[in-house]
Length: 136
Image 1 (cartoon, rainbow, N blue to C red):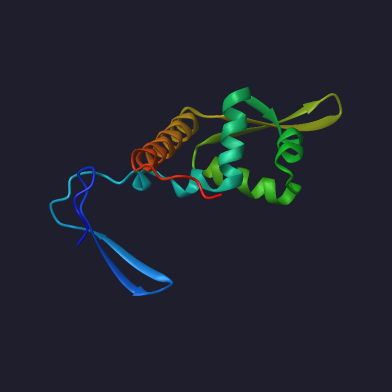
Image 2: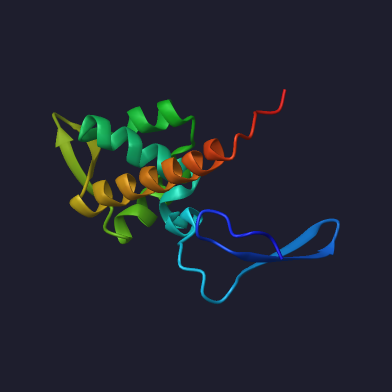
């Protein structure tokens, strides 16, 4: 049993050198910041898309393609996932004779990104409070 730390008590069971099981002890009231991480948003490419779109409000598909270094099919799949979750809006327009795809953030998308950032900040604060030094 580990000592109570920041209002959280956990029990750790070492199953093997490669596997560690962590469970919350009954009565522990603090919520671990890792529980705030949204897997849909946290995925590296989707987090990049949401961040870029949040900064620019509206972004051309080709800009995302070049900036994130993705293939068209890969970017399209990630955008589809985000659109189905209601986090981005996709607008396909004709500009002259050229089709263009614009991506913008929805209110839910902006909230999801900000919640993700807050969860990540909470994790960093927790690590900083423990005085853990970076590996060299």
